[in-house]
Every structure is written in structure tokens, then in C-alpha cells.
Image 1 (cartoon, chains in turn purple, blue):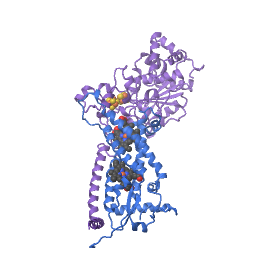
Image 2 (tube, each protein chain N blue to C red; image 1 turned 90 degrees about the vertical axis):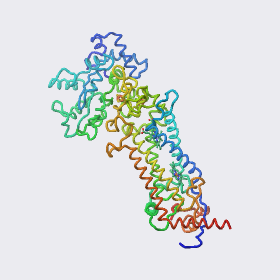
Image 3 (cartoon, protein in one colour; image 1 turned 120 degrees about the vertical axis):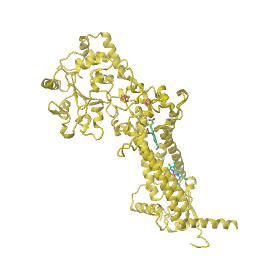
Image 4 (tube, rainbow over the protein chains, first blue to last red; image 1 turned 180 degrees about the vertical axis):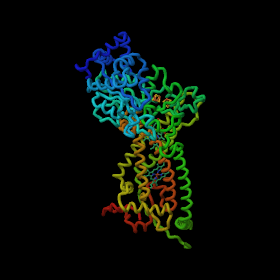
Length: 376
Length: 251
Ligand code: HEM
Ligand code: HEM
Ligand code: SF4
Ligand code: SF4
């Protein structure tokens, strides 16, 4: 458990109160989180208790090759307590983007957290690590991101890979990947548990849910085979999509400005990757549950899937064939091969009649002779 | 060849494809065509009915339903064929498919020269599969496996039955559904090309051999010239003496 006598920190609830939230607001926050995490009703009490008694967990939040969309998503998550308490008040021992300190002061803060809370702090990583040219493409305070990751992860309680960059490499690792951007699971020693929270960015409530889970249960949430929390990544976007009835009916948008688009038909044929994308967008939605891409008429681009940037195009279903140029998709190649096969078969049939003429002639002769004998 | 009378062959009826193999073959052919047709629709649904209302239509739903139902039949039929490769007759035996001997490769080379390069020479006449065909079926069986692994891998997350869930490791190994689906899509083309060539070659062998190749998948019989019997080790199975295992290859 995170509870440790040596950790002199206020509890989450103390922080909530200090920030001026009412008990009612606190309870609504906990209920919401529990619902997002897919917990049973009876577990709500457990979450409340943990929030009241657990001291805050120190968090180090590193930024490498990324665009900060994960942080943006997190601080905009629907309940203000998420940003105020989990991030702003509680978790900011070190994060380049949002902390007040800078320079040596900041480095010292990180070092002190790492020493003081050895084995207790959570390491959040936003961004991938470039390993080409000895890592010079991403350096902070004179150290490469690789060195920083190694140091910070050595004594962490758990590591969270925020977003597709840290989980899969995201666009900076698209071919030809000049900086050799590498997702962190390939670099960690494996001694510290890792949670992947892919998405570009991941949904803010999902991020908060992962942290709340860590805090309340003192252990990492149940993960799927790819290391993602099952509570949020076990269903495809397609499985919870409200346009699904149109998919099943076979009613599709053909172009973005056609009648079908106005009627809100399924976006499959204009490239929706919902059927191969595991994420909670259809359920949680974005921007305080306002909407999500499909709801505003744009297909899912599969942002939480590995390699989505190299695996085919955004506005087409057709699967491109790596190594045959952008234009060659599998079906074009297949059709060419089919035509070639047809020609080869026809040529073979002609050649058979020429080259094996005697053989066929004799067979026919034999057969005709038998036929004659039967007549007589 | 200005003979007045052609040599009249005496033919012997050989039971090459046992009934289970024949049933397997036609179930397989039917189901594979259904999988290709519905797979095509799933990959790029036609724009036939954009003006209908969703309430009464379930086109994609049916296509997927048929695809998955056919997939189950396909899979268990395939498993059955593997089983039959161990208990069936010598023409159905698994050794017919895997090139493990020098003789196998030699025969493949010979078939290549006779049937593809069309060189002159003594006609190659096999009784069961020729070595080349056997090897191509071996590749086909591997493609079956790929299709079952990727197909059930994709299906795992949609199904609540434990059986498809056994395949959940496939997309995990490939890093996700996107690539799994692409591989599933690409290998469909292998089957399309296979069917075209396969059906053509069945016609071809029927035509140049005159032994009833086409109907052999119907009744199970091929009709072999008496002298081929004499010349080869293809003796009628004699209950008194055990037939050698190495005698199933044609000359
Ligand atoms: C061996 C013959 C098979 C062929 C030719 C075939 C072909 C296809 C094709 C072309 C697609 C569309 C892929 C795309 O999105 O572009 C597809 C989808 C699919 N197939 Fe198959 N398939 C075969 C066997 C199987 C088997 C054995 C299974 C096992 C359950 C299976 C399960 C699926 C699933 C789950 C999908 C995705 C459907 C969806 O997401 O709605 N397929 N198949
Ligand atoms: C979708 C179409 C078809 C598929 C997928 C298919 C598949 C196969 C496979 C996998 C085998 C190997 C059998 C074994 O397990 O030993 C085979 C053999 C055979 N098939 Fe087909 N088949 C198709 C259509 C046909 C048709 C239309 C005929 C014509 C009558 C035919 C006649 C035969 C014959 C005679 C053999 C055994 C001869 C040989 O070894 O070359 N098949 N087929
Ligand atoms: S819009 Fe996309 S996710 Fe929704 S049903 Fe269509 S394909 Fe599936
Ligand atoms: S709908 Fe798809 S592309 Fe859009 S945010 Fe969700 S997972 Fe990413």
C-alpha cells in the first residue's frame, strides 16, 4: 500500500477541502470516477475511504518527444477536482510544463522527490524516447531522455505511459523514423509495473481513472495483453458507436458531402477505423462528454492503436501494402495478379493443345474407336 | 501417328478419394467461396442501398453472420482433414503434402517440366496428388491456418464464447487489430488465385490424362491403365502382403 509512515503528506480529502470544494462535490467526483472505472456500487465507499485516508501520492511527470496533448487532455477532464487535486495540487512534484520552478531548482525538486519517496512515487511519461545519435534529439538539463527515464524509473512504484507516444511511438516514429523514436516499454527494465494509456491524446477521464485506481487500490488496474487497463480498452470504438445500426444495415456515407452523411450513416467507407480501435470514446466522449469525432461526422483515425500512422490512409478503408509504394493497395495488386493468372491459364490451355497434341489426339482416337465398336 | 487402330487401354478402377475426403472437399469449397464473397463485402460494402431506412435492413449484419458461421464450419472441417491425414488412405496421408524426401522434390521438378514448361517426355501420371499439387495444398493448408488465426483473433473481442478467446494472443502478437485485419485481407487473395488455378488444373488433368480426374472428387474413383499397374508398385492392395509405404508415388 501507498500508506507509509515516512510519507508526510496531506490526504486527498484534506487537499479537496483546502481547495474549497464541498463534501457533495467530492462525493460526486468519486462516484463519477468509480463509474468510469467500471467499479461496482459497493466499491464507491472504498474509494471515498481511500481518498480520505491515503496521503497524496507523489508523481513525477516527464515530457519527452511529445506535443503535450496528453497534459492538455488531463487538465480539461470533466471534473474540476481532477485538475485541481490530482494534478495541480497533488501530483506536481515535477513536470516541465506546469511547475513553477525551473533550471537547477526544478532538477533539485525531482531529485529530492526521487530520494524521499523511493519506491513510492508514480512516474508518468509523456512522449517517446529518441535513441538515434545517442539520444541527442531530446535532452533536458544536459541529460538525454534515455538517461532521465532510466534514473526516474529505477525506484518508481509504477510507470504510466501517457498517450500513444509513450505507448506506441506515435507519429514521430512513423517511417522512416529519423530520430528512432521508441515507446518506453521497449526501454524499461521490466522490474517496475507499466500501464499503457494510449490515445492521441488519451481521454482525460481515462487518465484520471487510472490514477484514482492506483491511489485507491494501491496497485495497478487489470491490464489486457497489450498492457492497457481493461476497464477502458477492452472494447472497440465500433462496439459502442451510436452509428453502429447503420453499419449493420449496410448504410454508409460515400463522400463527406452526400445525402448519407447528412443522415448520419456509418463512416466505415470514408475510412473510419473504429472497427480496429480499442478505446472508450463512444462511451466517455470528449470535452466533458460533449461529443467525439464520429459524432461530429469524422471517422475514427485509430489514434490509440499502434502504428496507426503507417497502417493505411485516414480516409480510406483499403489497406496499403508496405513496400509497394503509396498507390499500391492490396486489392489493386490482387486484381493485377488475378488478371495475370487468367492470362497464364489461357496461354497454358493453348500451349497444351499444341505441345500435347499427340497425347490428346491418341486419347480421342482411342475413345472414338471404342465408340465405333459399340455401334457395330 | 498414322495408326489405324489406337492402343485400347484396359482401365482399372482405383478408389483414391474416400468419402470423408470428398465431403471435406466440397464443404471446404462451398464455405471458402462464401468466406471470400462475404469477406469482400465486409472489406468494401457495395453502395447499393443508400436510400433505404436502417430499420428494415441488416445487410452487413447478415454478411458478417454468414462469414462467422462459415468460418466455424471451415475451421472444424479443416481440423477434420488434418485428422484424416493420419487415419485415411495413402492418397489422403499427410506425407502426400510435405516434401520430406529427395523423391518428392524430384517428382515436383518432373511435374514442373512436363506440365508447366511442357517439355516432351514420358507423361507424368500420378494416381493420387502429384508431388507439385501436394506441395501446393500444403501451402494452402498453411494459408488456412493464417486465415483461421487472424480471423478468430479478430473475432475474439467480439465473441463471448471461450473458443474464439483462445486466439486473443494473435492481435496482441501483431500489435493490434489493424495489422491483423490487413493480413487477413491480403491472404484472401491467395485463395482467389488458388481457386482459379486449381479448377483449371483439374480440367487440364482430366483432358490430358483421360482418367476421370474431374469426377474423382465426386465418386472417388480414378481409372488407371492396366500397364501402369504392372509397371509401378501400384499393386492392388493385397490383403496377404502389406503394401510398402513408399509405393504411392506415380512414375
Ligand atoms: C479462409 C477464408 C477467409 C477469407 C477469404 C476471409 C476474408 C475476409 C475479408 C476479406 C475480410 C475483410 C477484411 C477487411 O476489413 O478488409 C474479413 C473479415 C473478417 N473475417 Fe474473414 N476470411 C476468412 C476466414 C475467416 C475465419 C476462419 C474467421 C474466424 C472467425 C474470420 C473472421 C473474420 C472477422 C472477425 C472479420 C472482421 C469482421 C468485422 O470486423 O466486422 N474470417 N474476412
Ligand atoms: C472453391 C473451390 C475449390 C477449392 C477451395 C478446392 C480445394 C481443394 C483442396 C484443398 C484439395 C486438396 C484435397 C485434399 O485434402 O487432399 C483439392 C483437391 C481436388 N479438387 Fe478441389 N477445390 C475447389 C474446387 C474444385 C472443383 C470445381 C473441382 C472439379 C471437379 C475440384 C476437384 C478436385 C480434385 C479432383 C482434387 C484432387 C486432385 C488433385 O490432387 O489435384 N476442386 N481441392
Ligand atoms: S462510424 Fe465507425 S465506429 Fe461507428 S459504426 Fe461506423 S465503422 Fe463503426
Ligand atoms: S475516435 Fe478514434 S481517433 Fe478519435 S479519439 Fe477516439 S480512438 Fe482516437
